[in-house]
Figure 1 (cartoon, rainbow, N blue to C red):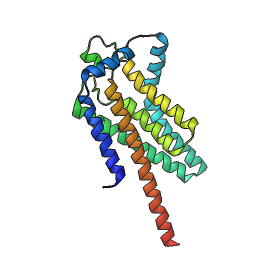
Figure 2 (figure 1 turned 90 degrees about the horizontal axis):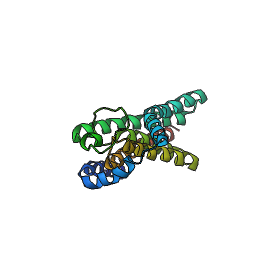
Figure 3 (figure 1 turned 180 degrees about the vertical axis):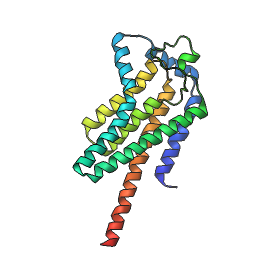
Length: 207
């Protein structure tokens, strides 16, 4: 088995162990994040969490549009594999939610404040965090500039914080979501490199 698949299996195994993380520790970390409400945090974090899906879709879509306009094959490939990573991340997240079936914090603990209109659904892992870290990692791997990496991961981290502040996820949900999202993006990047390498080999053979 190749090292990259060992890495992905490690990430999945680690993520699946997180629900067994001490429930008391999870709640102890969540409480101070969920409390201390301010109007600014309410508005900012609500917008932050609600914008994740749009940004996660718009990023590869925008890359694809620019790639086609400029006839940039590399950018088109970036868009394809980044989009595929987002889809893979979503599938893994939804499947894990269905398997683990963990209640959301506001449903299980009455002292956890619920700050949005989200009803029901499973808690583990955080889908919003998974999507945000998938997008951030896809960008960071392809465009290794601080002005791309820093804002991308700051936004992704703030999404995880928002989901805890809103009372819909535990810290372990957020960590697992970040692992799934980042691993999906990394696998997508490795797949892109592998395909590019195969094409280069084919070209050399035909020359």
